[in-house]
Image 1 (cartoon, rainbow, N blue to C red):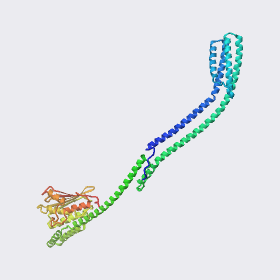
Image 2 (image 1 turned 135 degrees about the horizontal axis):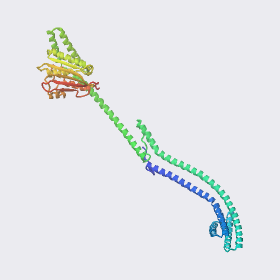
Image 3 (image 1 turned 180 degrees about the vertical axis):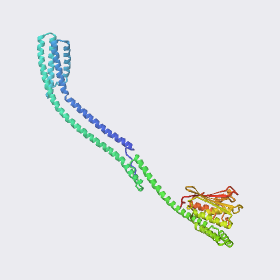
Image 4 (image 1 turned 90 degrees about the horizontal axis):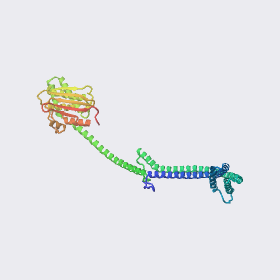
Length: 498
């Protein structure tokens, strides 16, 4: 990662944006002030172009008013006309003060001087006329009025000429001002375009300066989201908000890489441990099954065959054949099915054979009853789980019972996903301690009866747990000694876990 280069003047995006906005507004304001100043100056020059014509016209109008006031006073001798005369005379003298009174090399200014001098003479003559009228000197005021009128006409002719010269000069100036205004208009347009371009450049540079790191960050984040974690770390250009996000992204990327490395190491280690664990478990299950298969007690086989031989000696060969056939089926099933599973039909048939063999041996002392729901005989279960339970009921329940022994096998659906198998006897029952010892596998090896098959209840429990990978599938219940025992299997109908 490159070395950080802090921003020289501005430390955040907001500060830079505010600075650019202020700069753009300052440029726009300066441009507007300049244009307003130029426009005001042009307007003032335009106003001043015809100001001289207005002044000359005002001078001519005031001169006309004086002449009319004198004429009215001579005809009416009214005080209002006299008062008007004095007012207009004062106003005219004020206007004369604005005219040139020096000898200069200018036709217009010399005309102004002549008009001023003639106007002084004219005003003096009007004063003589008015005084003569007030003194009722008719001859004198008539003569004076004639001289006054001549001066009036001379002054008007000079004013007319001055006005024409001023108008001609002002028209030329007006055209020049119009041309200047057109130039100002074009210049203003050029200035506005230049300001627009400058502002756009400033804004573009600022946006590019801010967007470029974000664009790079976005592209890199997109690659990381796609699974490419080998992207290089991003340089932190400025210590602003984008720089903070970039540094956080770099730290996050480094953390992800480190986590993935640790996860890979952990998964490899876990896979090795799991492989060893599965291998050990497979060996253990294989050993357990082989051990369980080896637990069949050969005494049962010998005793049963002896009983068959005795029966053959006492009775005819047909019953002996049935007995020996049942014995063969029973032992054949035990040897063949110990290492796998079987259907419920096969398990129930094994129980039937076992009860038949026992009844032959013990002269029919056991009453056997079974209740099996329809359509369940093909459900797969671990082999050799029902016969050991029935055998346990016979050996430890009804073998020493004086009353007639009774075994009831019930196979039914508890619900759609659960199968319930119950083996009930009317034997001597069990204490709670005995039930607990069986369930906790506290019985010592070698304690089985010599007449049993050697497959103990603990064997059934272990094989059920191995097959279904669940516990608490077998339950033993008894109300105590003398009340019989009930063993219940609650098995899943679905396929077992592998």
